[in-house]
Image 1 (cartoon, helix red, strand yellow):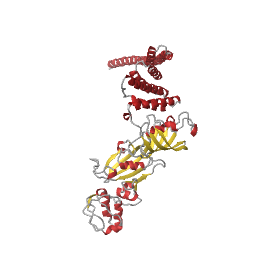
Image 2 (cartoon, helix red, strand yellow; image 1 turned 90 degrees about the vertical axis):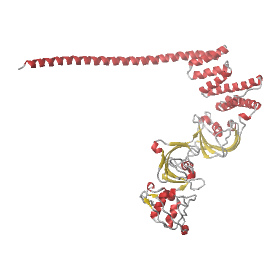
Image 3 (cartoon, one colour; image 1 turned 180 degrees about the vertical axis):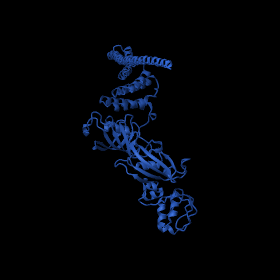
Image 4 (cartoon, helix red, strand yellow; image 1 turned 90 degrees about the horizontal axis):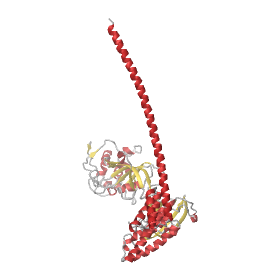
Length: 536
């Protein structure tokens, strides 16, 4: 139905384009004493009227004319009655009456109205992986997107620019299980460009959002370090390996604060300052000024040994709150000359050996990986220089293989040994360690081949000779195990066939008896028919 908004005084021309319109406009009109019919028209078209309306009663002396406005009226009286459900009211009334500004600078760019309260407790933080259900509409009620219709929750990383700014801000204010309405101004939605064809330019959008779940950002493949950002850092620069970082940290174990201090350390060498590996690893993901929570599994905390100094027992999970106050980046590999690389490699090799002897294999890996990153693409000037570079590189890769053996990362052992063998096909240590890794992976034939190659290089290697015998025994045991498995399998098949055969014979006998009875019945029927024909 099309209605005409009457000409009234006490307002501003609704067709006059100005910036910064808000939904408090309607409240102002109500206070100005406009008729309910006119208010309904304004409410229906509030999103499409580019006008700034002064809501205070003292401004009603401005004489204006509201010209003819075409309004799609749903026929329902939009009221601000508290007893009316939110779904029955227009967005204008709902957000004007109950909307909370959740923008950081309080510019009313994102207004929020809670429909269903969530669980008390935590809210998602920057970088968290959140799962939501949402329905997005224009202010005229036209739906443009809905995860509910797809029957699949929508997931994204909060605060990473993966969704419009209004959703990032709105979801960050929610609790798990909460359902809310969000009203987003164009600057917090799709702006002047819109999102054709569904969303026009400069459109204000409304969303109904349910926060299903959220979890922190996992920084390692094994899930050993999880980060949740409390305060976002500045810029886009991160500390690199070898950077000197200045941090404030607070460590907790089972809610007990055991460490609180300002400390500086070199990334890759945090253990020297009593800072666990997990904090060290997270540094390369942080920006200056960032404050984050780090949840560390024992592997990235104090491990099996614990830390008596802090009264931390073996295999304890830790939580650290870390603020990166400042850092000085180390030179990148391409910024170092060959002389610097060799000098740094010697120091890294020494430190890696110290960590290895202390049983800190992950820390040792960091040192040896540095050497590989510096020297892998280097070529020496002259034969002597080239040999020196190669010796450092081979030693680092062999040591990495040994560390990964201790860490039971057998695929990485094979990978590093293969790199050594490419440069030195008769390298005894590389062949032996690759054989060990393959043996642990139950690749007995391949392992035996490696140990035999070791014996070709050094026939007096007793360990390799013993491993050949070990592989032969493992192969025999494996074959015997296979025989038993297949024998049992064939026996079951045979028993099944026998049972199936007996069933067939039984069915055959039954069917033979049935056939015989059938033949007898036929003969009797024929005789009776013959006798019937002889009767008068």
